[in-house]
Image 1 (cartoon, helix red, strand yellow):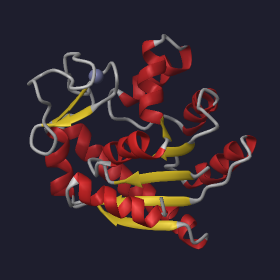
Image 2 (cartoon, helix red, strand yellow):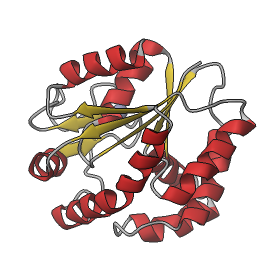
Image 3 (cartoon, rainbow, N blue to C red):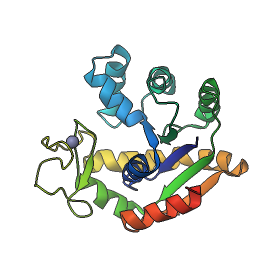
Length: 215
Ligand SMILES: [Zn+2]
């Protein structure tokens, strides 16, 4: 079973790439974004506390995230490959994440980083629509839905993420840059770092991912 951590500039399409691995290579997608949204909707007390931060584009404190995350990973299917999305964002979380994987007798096989310029990242995100029921993601330019305004998968009405405004996006990009550098260095030292140019089409990037992960 593979255990891979995906990271990248906001808007680099990492969610879409992981979804392709879920559909084609028996991966389970595990992200703090899905976690916060799902558990907030379930009325979880700690997720409601976290919502006060992320709904405004403010950093959710590491300790709070980690407490919720431990409960979230317990729900994952251990017989599958695991694709974590951006769950390590501060250097101190590298070790926390190792310990967490250890509880499931797993070790990180690869750290995949999707890189993208700021301009492309912003353009990609302001035109993004999501399905809050099945978590499918669409884009007005790159990945439009078949019936406008409705999810291809489950026919629900598509919505904007409340944190997908230009200001909130710019804040996320700069926050991301500031914090990701030391994490990249930490995983480079372990020789499991893979950088992938995310400016190409979804299928082209997917081919590179499959190739680099040896799937
Ligand atoms: Zn849907």
